[in-house]
Every structure is written in C-alpha cells, then in structure tokens.
Image (cartoon, rainbow, N blue to C red; front, side):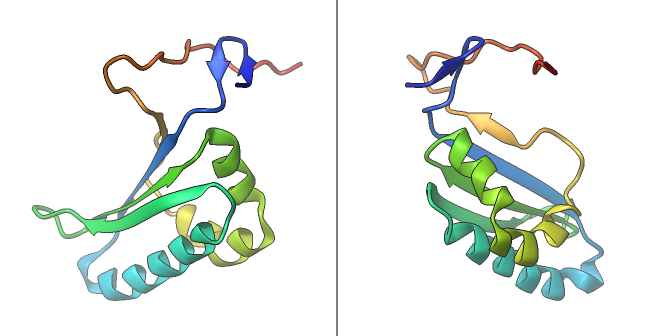
Length: 118
C-alpha cells in the first residue's frame, strides 16, 4: 500500500466524465467516445467502462471507467495513444471532479487535503 499525506493510492478508482452534447451531434459523439474508451481500455490498470446517455436529457452523456488505482488512471492519461485518441473528446467533459474512490461501508476513506506545490 502506498500512502502519501493520508491518501491511499492502492484502492480502486471510478472515473465519471459527463458531457453536454447537442442532440444532433449525438451519434458522432458516441463514436468518438467509444474510440476514447478503447484507447483507455488498452492501458494497464483499466478494469472496465461504460458509455451512457441520460434517459431524461438526451444531450447529457457519460463515460464511466474503473481503474485498479489512481496511479493507473493518471498514467493512462499520459500515454501516447490516449493523448492521440481520447484527450480531445475528454477535454469536452463538464468541468467537475471526475475521480472517485470506493466508499462502500467498511472502506477507509482518503483524508481530504490540498496537493503540495513543493
């Protein structure tokens, strides 16, 4: 287990990226999102993922992915193939925090603290 400032980096991570896409662009967006998921899926530590569209608001899309740990997710974002095939579409995500730790009953949660700049 890796611990840094009260944070555990060996726990599974769920990443939720939400997107607002005009309905007319939905089909092309779905293809691009599938390409991004394929690029992420090829990375070490990828544990699964789904593409979804909101049932009440067809302009709201989601890409959810699961990772062995936060390090795997962060390394995936740095890979050449992901930069080439996924970063452009992921940059269209609604600006909000997207990585979540497992919080099932009995799970020890991270201690919230700002990142150190030094």
